[in-house]
Image (cartoon, rainbow, N blue to C red; front, top):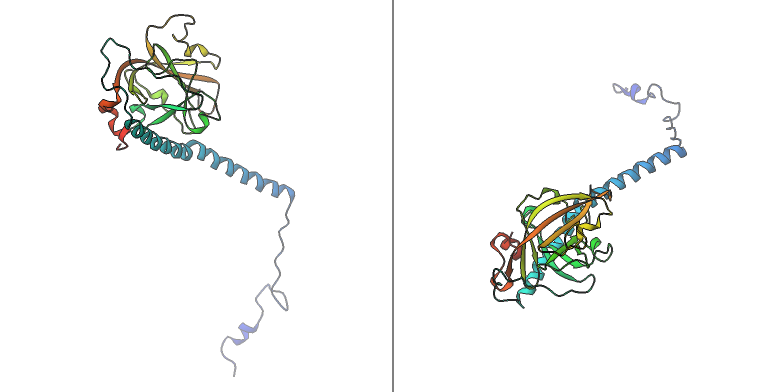
Length: 261
């Protein structure tokens, strides 16, 4: 006696082929389809690369720069420079000129965050300085604290993004340059936008060729806008105070210098 439903189970499903299941039709691959998929893949790779350059890479390089700067400051502490601050009317200590690509100073800008601590090397070469995440000192300009213009350059974005927030500086913001001798404090004055050919910004007196300087200045230069060389953004500051290393860093940046920020 047949079990209920046995005939139905043995019968082929509606629409099926006699003797088995209908085979699937193979999808035809066209050259145009392959090209489209390759273009989509390439687009995703480009977007991932841009994300890496704009965000993740800057975070990684910035963190490395901070760690290296803290380590360098601790090394300098073992061989302190001047033990007393110069008299109010006396010039600050001036470092000797050093070879190309050698790191000799560090930049601290509280406006950019407590963890902003970046190294400065001699020269503005792309491959030996700027693309290594460092700021570069224009060799034809003065050393920190010297009479004239201490001018430095950096990428605005990518390779650490050292001057990404240069446009956010406020009048009176402090800009610190650290060397083995101590800390040079500058006060931010103003921003300027110039064409790439506007090299007068690094003159001893910016934009005043041949004029003898009477001020001690700092000039920060970078590209503007992001990932473009259409123009340069320039930040100027004037020297205020020198803090000798033996006396320790100024309170405003002590947490940054000691790595406790």
